[in-house]
Image (tube, rainbow, N blue to C red; front, top):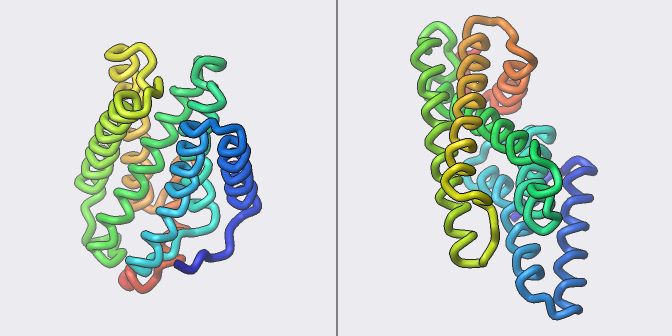
Length: 211
């Protein structure tokens, strides 16, 4: 796998995770070492996806994906940020919903080859919303499995935590859907439509009809 040039933030996160894995292994803290290695492996998934499907992920977008994984699984769990800061979970779930929604939008928009006139804005906005909600639900299943298999505490208060996560995910999915809608209307929406525009311009071969 060829790793494209990344931001300094990504390199820093990789170094921290590798150091954590080595130190934990040295201290025979095998659970922490395994989690650090697992998180490190997960941070390479966007680049595997990029290589497999020949889709260019802008440096900023790639950094945000790696940062989210680091903030959720390393800082949130190993660093115990979820317990230290009540807003940490809200921040990450809303941000994830927005990011996943934007990814869902560009994937659907790709089917129209970037043709703004052929792509129905409202329909794509609704699809963006449901994609983000579906991924959010899958993430809750992932949290449950991590708690059950590895003894982590990602769900915190159980059902209450899960429901609040889904509510926050709902809000983030709405924002992502609106960003896609306004992008197709050639209007910016809190800067998020610019991220869509960056991705489209970086992958022109998939959006040949975009003007």
